[in-house]
Length: 513
Ligand code: BG6
Picture (cartoon, rainbow, N blue to C red):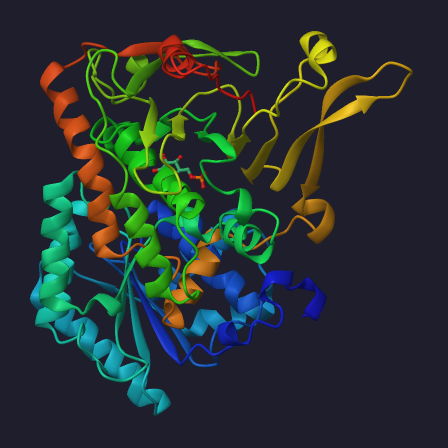
């Protein structure tokens, strides 16, 4: 394929071309994530020529599936979900190296069979393969899988060499501080931390990585990136979708666990952390942990710093949609929040006194994820008359994570004419306009990074715990009060009134992205 078809970000990145011969084993191979994201990601890496010449894929699941059927399912998944259509030449290289093993997750003998299967492949090609295990199952079997990876010797395979066994763990990483600690303890009993890749797919998004480039590759932002110049920060991750067919999972989770504790906190950490000494995994994650630990415990309860709400019936794109408690698999009296908004204070030299507002919700007016940095207003003296009439705006720098990825800056500008009248205008950069729109998906980058042993874009164990430490008291409180204090918002709106009040108490208001 032509070099120009490759994603520009991947061109010329030599470390990403150096993945050793690898076998990826997916636990949960017949699951939704495997079909929607993992198989298409692997296929696209193959398309871009980023997989090693010796690459094998093994699906593992409870369901008995013949190798041929698994291959057919994989091809169907690529056809349906890949960003590029199925190229027979690319798939022709992957297909014969794809196989399936069925077994229970707590069945040691099945893991021994898996170990033999991997050894057989190695014997056949006459070389060692780096084992990369991808745990993409429901969380109740994370621990048995880890234990059996240990017991079967797979977890320690090639330890001490660069192509040692590696394990990617999907979310959710625990459901509170205790369970995250327990999971970390199980991990530590079979793996060394450097073998572990805890996924937060937001870190694989191009624009999230660009946040670091924008902050640290440009000299104009960093001098302003502090309490002296920044008034507040708003992080929004709004979705149009409802819970759909995921009611069973979502009822047990809710917005705080599903989105805030992980995705929005990662956005916050990258926005607020100190410049790392280098871009290696430990330096970046050390800085992220430091800033997460500097966040003050939240004030909880009536008039506290966290708002929760559920969507009620409403209109989405002109179509009537049901409320959360009318959705399939949801209890009529459900106490699970589909929206959360909060105010965080970071107690360090850089951010003291700057509120960080976070919000996320399902069935909101528009799908948009963005980070908005609101700068302090200029002193109003010079344009006082005009600004009274024409609104001298605060400068806002916003990183549009998705969709319509880009960056924009709001500046006050003179309206042409004899009078000095001002108007806020937006200066924008759009990825699609500059780089084209067929960018790599988050999972492509993340699977490749794990394959080359780069943990920068993955969550470290202490990072997961630092975030849970902040939110566990909130979850405990909500559990203790049931539905008391649960707000509602109409599907298709920007959230409940309580979220507006949270900002209004500090003289702020939410952006309408
Ligand atoms: C997942 C959540 O982690 O992220 C989902 O479980 C959510 O509920 C999804 O819809 C959002 O991801 P994205 O990439 O579509 O913004």
